[in-house]
Image 1 (tube, rainbow, N blue to C red):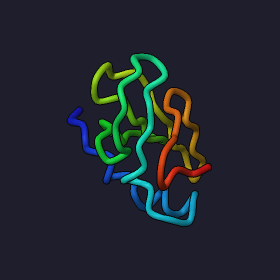
Image 2 (tube, rainbow, N blue to C red; image 1 turned 90 degrees about the horizontal axis):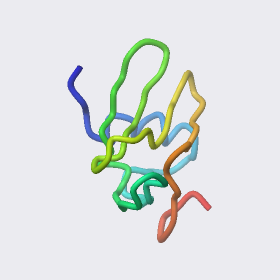
Image 3 (cartoon, rainbow, N blue to C red; image 1 turned 90 degrees about the vertical axis):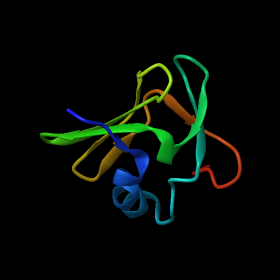
Image 4 (spheres, rainbow, N blue to C red; image 1 turned 180 degrees about the vertical axis):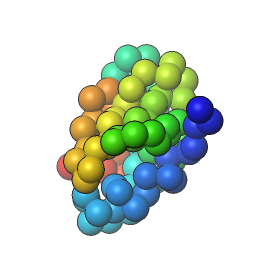
Length: 82
């Protein structure tokens, strides 16, 4: 399966947070790499979507039917969801 970039989940994140999220920078909790959500590697399949760190490929977030879980990605900095 080919990966898409994080822009593929822009609509879902906008629906969940009410504003554009792809420019928000986060940190991978596995490897410490920082990247914008737009840089994540996204895999859309079955009932959910998985976004992975572009550096170490650890799961950064899982989206399933309108729910989002940031399991391995800390959002920080300007434009964060805090």
